[in-house]
Length: 338
Ligand code: TK8
Image (cartoon, rainbow, N blue to C red):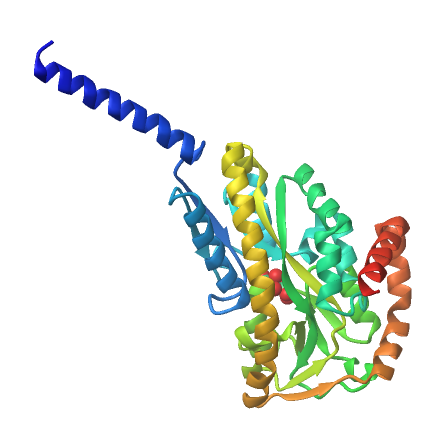
């Protein structure tokens, strides 16, 4: 064996063993580009958490799983993105549970008003049996539900007058999420509820196509609704979550190692997002006040009246969603409460 041939052999052997060692360490992970869409703008709780998710995924996959994030509904409204995921035209998204109820009606439980008293109760239900069972139901519809992010307790804004009593909602054209229960609740409270995707909302408020809307204060701030809505009423009438989802068509093509990394990054983003959302919501009140919004909080007595008014809607949808499911929900909430 001449020396040149020997060197070549050594080089080849070293290259081969490196390749095997590398493959074992990096597991079965191919370079991939994941498109992740969301509805709020980049400077929002969603934007920050989406970037966190992308960074985390890139880090734990050794740079192989790259995520490109698209805010401001640039890939479409929640409903449009849901469709794109089902069809396999988009890999991932985060969106509200309310429009998901069109696919899996049980997600409507989160639109039942005045259920949760605190974020802690919501976390327990979402990360517990009920929340996880609901995510599993998405698979049959072509979606893989990974984790829940906090959207939060919703409050009302409008351009007409402060809402002090339920009667003040009379005649207010109020944008609601595209969901039967939300529609029923606000019409029963006396508003004129108009279902509309979030992506059209700012313009609709600005042009006075609608008079008001309801969302957590973090969103009222990041979407600059204070520019077109002078009145904010703290009602905390419902806590709605967001779901981070993947296209099932795409997901099924991933290796188990890749799926594990995506899940792991999604869980990290959930913990980051909830903390950030809670911190941001404390700051947002001050910002909204400074921006000149007139803020009032509905009294406990008035909340009790509102609850009473919407009870028929709750009863009707308890039947439709399944009394057992609603019972399970209430049991899980009281467990978390005590
Ligand atoms: C953003 C929406 C938004 C929701 C709504 O795409 O529609 O009002 O609260 O966060 O999912």
